[in-house]
Structure formats: structure tokens, C-alpha cells
Image (tube, rainbow, N blue to C red; front, side):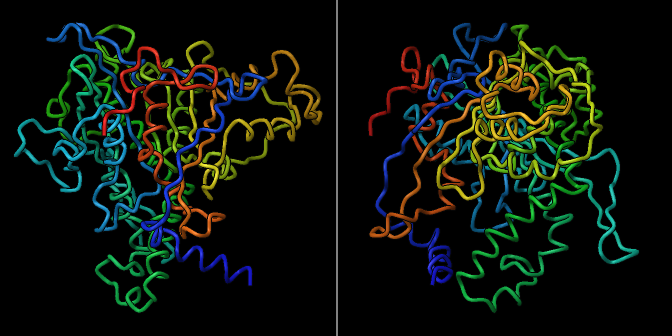
Length: 469
């Protein structure tokens, strides 16, 4: 009976929520890994990160650059053309701006440069040469060249406040090159949908949403193709840094590679502390959180100073529905019984702020993850001894954990998902819990305004006051 009940609830998820009674958004706690106390976490917020840019025509204008990276995508779904727009609409709504303005149309979907709107506001990211992946069919290989597309959106929140958003879309290209060859024959929106069309409606929709367009992304990322996805994100950051410093996408060449974009960025004044370039912050969703985490972790520990280190120095990374604890299981590897610590940045490390809905099946809070990992692990630097829970309260331990991770860690424990059936409040929509953070005005205000000692910062933040309805 229990299995039948769970199955019925999963089938109803996402299809009956339209008639559900909306629950109010709640922020239960804001916790900081470095602090041995609950609900005392603090972070700046995107609006506070904005700063004037030298030489701008408006000397009073404050600007911030935002790199947005999506997660498991559904971008292949022809009925879901607005990937990434919810985040832009969330910002626009916080400042009572028009949420339907044409500037958030995604021209990356065209697959080519659209010059009808004047200056090209997007660029394509490719490998320097074709990459071939052998498949389960010996003697056959799949080819990958195009990695991603990045577009640029500008939101004028106030006369003196501007958000420049660089959205990185990697899912379509990897689907076309790799995933569709494995599972595309079995999805409803593909050209060969004869099999999928035989399924019952909701079974078909759930298989597409959860497996074909969902889990297949994570499985692919955890394999050899993950290196190419990380290359795409690294390249996008270098290209965005150049653009923010005044180098147009046209000047970059419209199609960029990692070696080209990052080499050019090194020779460009892209440092965010110079006054020429506004600061960068990052927003990631779902699998995108793990991708960016891996990219930054690798670059921070390679001891090679480069553009990506500059733009992430003292930055803030807002992770919505992160999957880092779950997907980090793929990073397990045997190590010597003694291991020297790698050097990491200390006073300039970025801060991760993880927004986690309590009822999301796929995401995990980070503070308890690292606490649990620490107390269940053996200390390689102290005779391989097993630690105990009390070690977390010892002086300096939490700060050392933060330095070992390489990031400041702040958790936001939130709740907003609606019951999928109004009279059954004990089960809420898991898909909404995973995907709809940007649709919650209260969460967007926290992201924009920041927090101080576990509370939303009000003073000095334009977005702190909800706009009139």
C-alpha cells in the first residue's frame, strides 16, 4: 500500500499543483559553517556587491556582473523555452520592473548569431578541436565540438543600479552531441518518438522530466564528458570577464575556446578590484552548483594565478538546490595514509550561500554535510585517528574546516513548495521544491539584500521593501 501511495503522489507531482493552496515562503535558519551557533549566518547580497565602474558615462551608476549556470535542464523540451528566465524575472520583480520585457528572450536557442537586434549579445563556446567519445558500440564514436552558448542580459533595477547577467547554456549542446544518441530515441519530443508515445501520459512526462532530461545530465557529468562541461564553464567566465572589461563578443570572435578566451582575458584589465570592472557574483541551480564548485576548486588549488581567480576573489556564489554532497560520492578516491594539505586561498576565498528547500529530494544542506563528514572521517594529519563529534566545538576547528574546503559556507534552510493536493498537506510538490527558488520574492530579497546574523538586511537595500502589487 505504501508503494502505491508514493507512486500516486509522484504521478500527481507537477500536474495538480496548479490547484494547490499556496504556502508562505519560510526562511527557517541561516547557518555559517565557521560559527558554532545556529541562525547567525551573514553574507553581503548581490546588490551590496555592486560598485561604480571607472569611466562609465553615469558616474553614479553601480553595477554588478552575475554569471548564471543552470542545472539538469529540460532544455531539450520544446514546451519549456524559458530556462533561466525565472531568475531574471525574480530580479525584475524585486524592483517592480516589467517581468515580460523582450530583453530576456533567449537567442542562444537559435543556434546561430542573431544580428537583427544590433550588437550581438551572445557567444558560442567550443573545444579547440573535435573530441570523440567511444560508445557501447565498438568502432563507433560520438563527436563533440560545440560546448555551450552564453548570452548577456542587462537589467536596470534603478537609475543608479544595474545588473549584467551572463547566462551559460550547456545542456542543449551536450544533449545534441551525446545524450540524444543514448536516450533520445525514447523521449517524447525527439524525432523518433514512436516508443514514448505508447506510454501512459504521466509516465511519459515523468520519464522525460526526471530521467531523460534530468538524471542523464548528472550521469553524463560524472563521466569523461564532465571535463568538457567544466571547460565550457571556465571558458564562459573568461569570456564574461573580458566583456565586462569592455571587450565585446564581436571583438572576441563570436566563437571562443578556453585557450583563446582565457589567454585574451589574462591580457585584459579584468581585475574586479581595479575599478575598471564591476564585481562578479555567481548563481547556480541544481547540477550547475556542483559544476561550478569543481571548476573553482580546481583553479584555486592549481597555484596558477589567472582570470578566474581574480573574478572569484571575495565573491559570493548563490547555489539553489545544490547536489554537492550527493554527487561528491563520485569523487571518492584512495589516498596515502599521510597527505599534505594543498594550498588554498584564505582571506580572499569566495562565499557559498546554499538555498535548500527542506522538501527537495535532490539537494542537501552543506553545513551539516561538512560537519558530518568531519566527525566521521579519519584525520590524516594526526596519526589517522577517528574524530568525534565534540571536535567541532574545539577552538579553531571550524575555521580550519573552511580553509580546507576553500570556501566560506552559509546555508539557508527554506520552505516554499505547495501541497500537490490541497487537502493532503503532508506531501508537497518535489519538482517545485527543486526548481522554483527564483519564483519566491522573499528568497530573491535575501539573495539581493544579504543577511546579517541570520536576518534579512533591510537598511540600504532597494530590494528589501516588497514592490507594490
